[in-house]
Image (cartoon, rainbow, N blue to C red; front, side, top):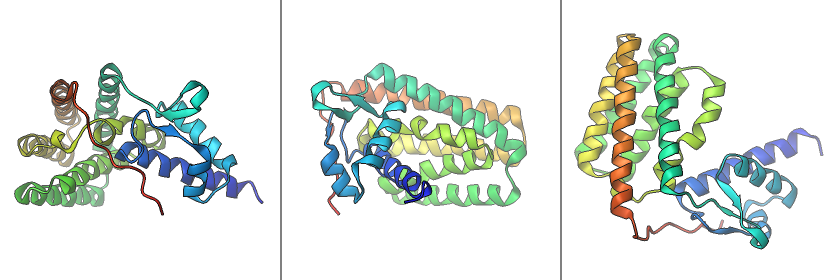
Length: 230
């Protein structure tokens, strides 16, 4: 077997497991049984171990002592630190996108923004969540920075890993949409200071919303889906 095949398997396994963690299919604190995961993914334990090591380095997986490895259980402090990382990365992406984003990419950003508008008007929370993420991904891609893109998965973590759908209340979605509008218009104007201010304001507002949500969820149990069998 050539070296390219194991690397492909490791990469794919890492991405599948990351998505399962971020989506809540593998819940925080849940033990990661390697034999079961290898069977689930249809791979041997060698690429699986490497994938788990990468996720451990990213803070998504942690040692559980004699129990092996488990999905990381994140404290409110870590959650908010992650929000700060995310806010800074989003702001940096928006600033770089001012000069680097093509007109075609700006048109794609506006189209994504219009899809988000429809989600809010018809109020489809899950579709809004997807549209919210899509908006930010368009900005990140418009920055044309591979190092930034590699840094973003952990920065995206709080959205799906840490809170229930109640986090995406209609009123909060309307606030986010209006702030996305400000970011998009500043990008279209190629105004870096305006973009920076809009992105920083959005990051601060989202962090405060997370603080309020964590306060509401304190002591509550958040239901998360189990990993579906294929």
